[in-house]
Length: 118
Image 1 (cartoon, rainbow, N blue to C red):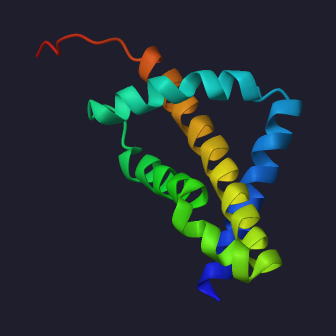
Image 2: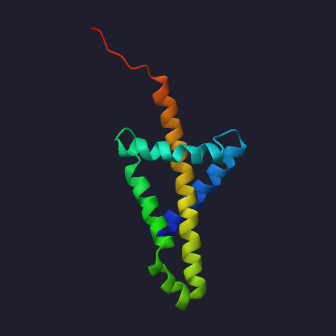
Image 3: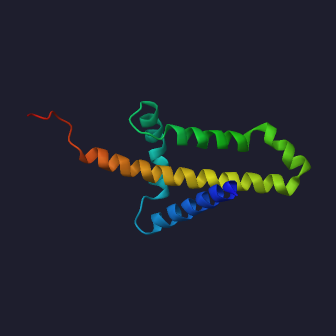
């Protein structure tokens, strides 16, 4: 049940992110260009997306790993459905996390760094 809810949330995030680009939100190109900056900011500790990026990387490794070939060989259609659901989750996660990162960047850039003088 919880697994189905997570998949539903991923599909919802994917649909929301795709529609946001059409309504004036960040485009797919802008989101993809933000990926390297997001990873760099997470690695340096400036952005708090490290765990989410790690989960996306683990899901990607699961889809492309040779160990995942076994279910496709024996359970043909179920193995492919499993991969399709995982790819949809990855896409939804990347789109929603890049949107979150772009908002974080916008807020961070609007703050002027300096000293507080008493």
